[in-house]
View 1: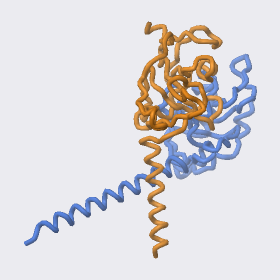
View 2 (view 1 turned 45 degrees about the horizontal axis):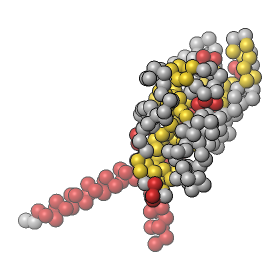
View 3 (view 1 turned 180 degrees about the vertical axis):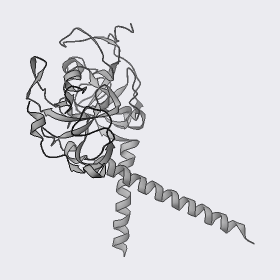
View 4 (view 1 turned 90 degrees about the vertical axis):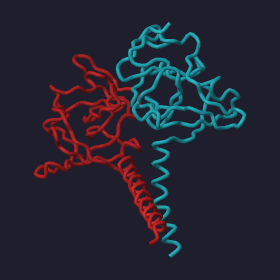
Length: 163
Length: 163
């Protein structure tokens, strides 16, 4: 009967499992932070393109290199609450003229103009003004859920943009 | 065999390193004179500061702290400033388009200590808390400048509702 080797054996195993958890946790963190992630959408502001409970695949590479273009659907931190994320379409780049009510406004440097596709039911740049590009987290690539409606979201939907 | 082991340790080590820098903190060089005299007092000798990421994970910052944030004007640039006002504070501005401004929800008012030589909220207005990336807590280099950065508001810059 020799208990000591058993205990140390057990400790090595626990340490091994912990090390694996740290390793894979870190790899997951990097993938979600630098490559892309999945987001669940709630709210009506992007209908009819995206509905509540749709799951989107997003990538984080384009925003990191500031290659966001007009017409992209992006995920950004809400300007008024950093813990909430918003999903909107980029409707104006720096220098573009945008209409707010009856007046027009020029999007300042380093900002974007965000609008929901559901123009009548969307809290967007028309309420909180242009959004700094530094708040953009990701660009929506495609919808992966529900499975019946898997669809790329990267092409420009001009019928929504022109009005 | 040795090469695969080396490759494998790289594959695991790099994500662990990145995750550590992302969640705990890192050291960065301070450029410019905008934070004199707290930082870079003897320019052109530059200070290196410890940027604490862990303390801003819930986006809680208070008045007087030195924070680094993504510039609202240029998303590729990080700036370091002092938080002068948090949401709800009434700020008496220096050269902004309004002489008094109430800091909106989810925003803060940042200023460089070197008034008049700093590109700060007095030129671009209140900044969203989502742009704050880290809190500067310690000067790590040069050695004779070793010290913690204490939260303090420059004289005369207290929000109107505090004084």
